[in-house]
Length: 144
Image (cartoon, rainbow, N blue to C red):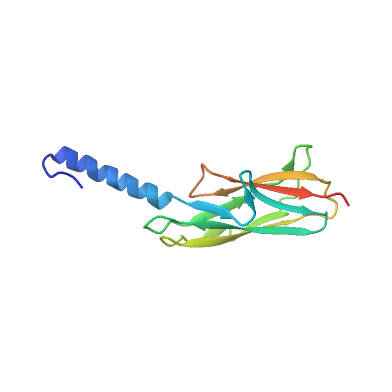
């Protein structure tokens, strides 16, 4: 709180406290049940099979978050291969906010097409409340 002696100091203090409160409310921590420093690792999986994992979105703030949009981008390989747009999903794609101190489960699933070339495929999970911190996803597709 402000000192009460200078209106400018009091106003500046209130603005700083409000800004810090907004930062706290926008904080979102993501954790995966099969993660590494490199992000979420799925597989290895043969073509025609499915691999999946869970991401947890944690809200450590004292206030609930606004609605959260989750997007899983396409999976591509360094050799130029890619999986179809519908091969990788993250559900739900929208969370109606996360309670203060609460968590929400996000299911990441990759349905590898039957004719998918073997290789390592990479993608990103983007979360609207943490756009500066995408989660990398890696899937190893095996030879048949």
